[in-house]
Image (tube, rainbow, N blue to C red; front, top):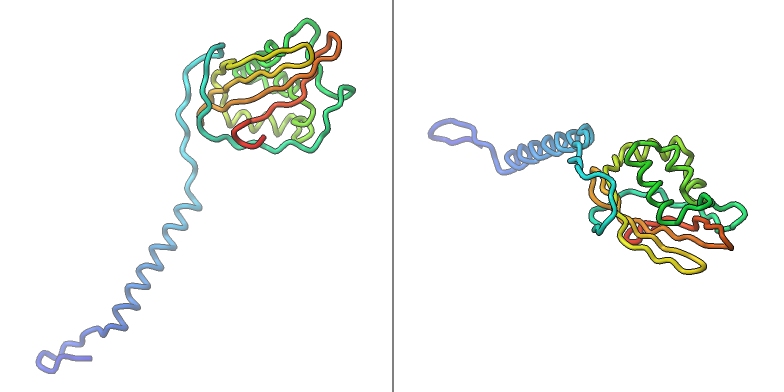
Length: 183
């Protein structure tokens, strides 16, 4: 298509559309490449230390689903003699704050241990970077206990519910869940 007076060839509507589509395609390829190659930015680090008090659940934390392991006192994690369920939970979070993943792993309920080995647990928790925690609620009866605690990590605060069963003088760790996240 040309202008008869000037002799200049003008792009027709089809050539313009094709050129625009080519530009859009190139931009999409660039955006996809940036997304794929982009490394996640470091999250801000909390500054509190492990304490007890009132906490709030915020954010979302990935959680490895527990393997379907039925609770059995014969194989369940026992709370050390003379230690309360609340002290057990504090020991778990104290270990995480100190990056002592071996100790923390040993305090987990059996289903969490069955879901991942100690090395995987350690690697995952190192990434979460637990900075502090609070004990939010303690409910104890003659046969059981529920401890709610919030861990503060680089990605936010995450609330856990620990459940214990008592048989005689022995406490057993039944479960540790993230109530707002289905497990």
